[in-house]
Image (tube, rainbow, N blue to C red; front, side, top):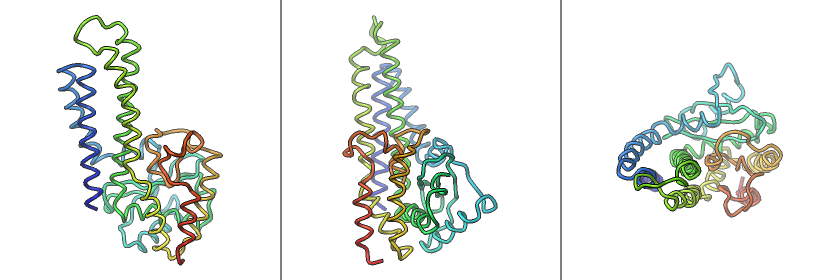
Length: 283
C-alpha cells in the first residue's frame, strides 16, 4: 500500500513539474503562473475525480440490479468472497471484449465491463475476469492506475498543444514573448516519451498478481485462463474504437492490441505468460 501511495505522489509531482515546464516553454513567466494554476487543478482532479474522468472517457454507464441482475449478482458475490465492499457496476458500450476497475480506494471503487465481454464469455470465465478486477481493488492499485492514465492523457494533450503551436505560432515568431521552434520541438518530442514512461510506471507484474489473487479468491484458475485467451483473440478482432490509448493499462488486456507495433511497449505482459502462470497454480 505504501509503495502505491509513493507512486501516486511521484506521478502527481511529475504532473506538476510537466505543467510548470510546459507553461514556461509556451508562455515564459506568465505561462509559468498559468502552469502552476493548472497543475494545482489537475492534482486535485486526478486524486478525487480521476475515476469519473476515466469512466467518462470510455463512455461507461452505471447500471443497477434491475438492469443487469446476473452481472450485478456476480460482482456482489465476488466482492463478498474477496471481503470487499460492493463496488459500483458499469457497462461500456461497444463490441470490444474487455473490463477494468477504477476508484481511489475499496470504498469508492467501480468495476466496468464492455458489452462485448458479456457476449463473448461464459459465466465462469466472466467470474474470473470480475475476480481479477476485484483483486486490483483489493490490492489497492486501482488509484495509481487511474491517476497514471489521467496524467498520461494530460501529457499527450500538452504534446498536441505544442504541435499546433508550432504549426500556427512558432513558425512566425519574431519576438521574445512567445515560444521558439526549438522549445516547441522539445515539447513535441519529449512529451510522448514522458507519456510512455508513465505507462511503464504501472508495473506489468501487477497483472500477474491480480491474476493469482483472482484464482485464490475463487479457488479456481481455469475460468480466468480461458477468458484471457478469448479476450486476446477478441480484442485483435475488434479493438477499442473510442477512448484514449493512454488508459490502456487500466484494462485486463490491452484494448488497442491491434494497433501496437512492438510488444516491448505493451502495458501488459503476454497472454501466454499469464495463462502459463495461472495453469501452474494448484487450483
